[in-house]
Length: 83
Image (cartoon, rainbow, N blue to C red; front, side, top):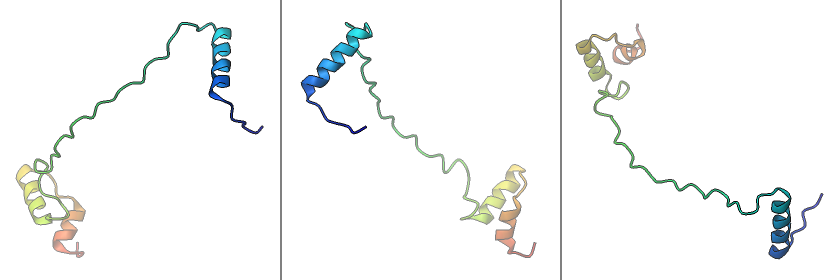
């Protein structure tokens, strides 16, 4: 089937007849929801501690202070690939 454009008046007539057949005469469509932009939360970069790949020594020190195990890949970054 090939789409054939019709005039606005003809489209309105078809829409009106369809609405009558579906018995939705006085009903208005739901208005479009308006979305409001939220302000972006500042990133918690400093609270998370030093970046493990940029500063592996500082990250390892933070892990030691907090009693967390130091991940193997960070130990490899610090000591080289001899582990």
